[in-house]
Length: 450
Image 1 (cartoon, helix red, strand yellow):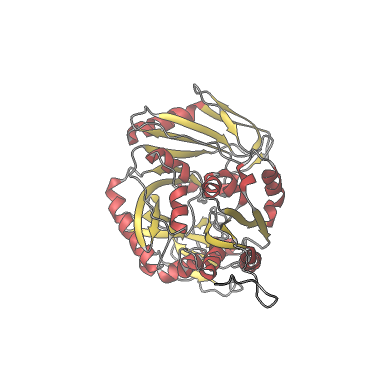
Image 2 (image 1 turned 90 degrees about the horizontal axis):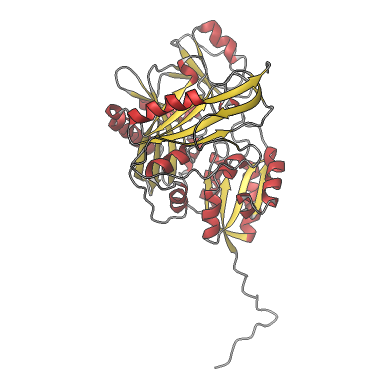
């Protein structure tokens, strides 16, 4: 037997490509949740990131710092587009990933932020890796499509297409009504209106290209449901309680998340509605964050659903509540590995403090062993460790989200918030009591008028 020798007409075997995983979304969110990066690095995967062009300077600085978790990123692509324009980032994401596909074997992709959730679904579909699915990826970024696919779960609504503000028939709108830009996030532009003239004025405040949803306001408590779904099957789901500025203003900025919700009487109803939602969107693999309101008759109405990892501090709350982080399970699902998550064992809450408008001067924390942590410099949130099941009620952290000297305005979107704290307790009653005590010991100091 003779050994084969490559001749001039024999092509050499192609070099094996490095295995890689794509994370997409706000660089700020990726940086503040470093466990995604450390988990992927631990597996020996190259980390590729797609984020908005506006984060270029922050990303370059973080990736150049060897002590920053962002230094684990192999390559980063910046895409341009208007956050208020649907599909604005799709072409850029496809173009960048086309180039990466030549150099890497991409084994997974997932969105950790709203604006790139739809492009990520398309990328995953083209790459043949697991994803929420095309319908779920698309509908999760357009509130009017959620109404289209899920009419039985939705409040009465009217879609006002771009360019039809002056001609849309608004006679059927029932008040109070909620006006929502169809594709924004972070409660941006979402307001309550009390009559036809106010509605017309509000419609005139949005850019001409934006699709706007007008729907009957559901009066009642608000919740979210976080779900892990694998192969179309719910492997974990939990109801979170929510508080927003809607209790005292016309806006809907989130002020508190409680994991789990203390409303046991509504738990089964919300989980059943959430299962109908997932079936209606043909959700395949990933995590969802769906938001609901329940009226006086006990009927749940879908406010919106996101096919990406939950925002704010919900990942922290689930780790405090169970003792285990969610991020590894999210990645296991995206990679097609067996995943699971334990039951909740502690009552946890994240609270955002409201502030007086003005210049942020200081945050004073009068609590033994706890100080305000200013995270604006690095952007990375501290590793907030869970305690034991039988720990007494505990203040885990106080975080300052804005830089000293920042101009603070009244809360109209999530980006306006400045200070948050995390607490947990063995009972919901003890959690409520602890929140009152912490509120009395944390003070946001502002000076002058913004």
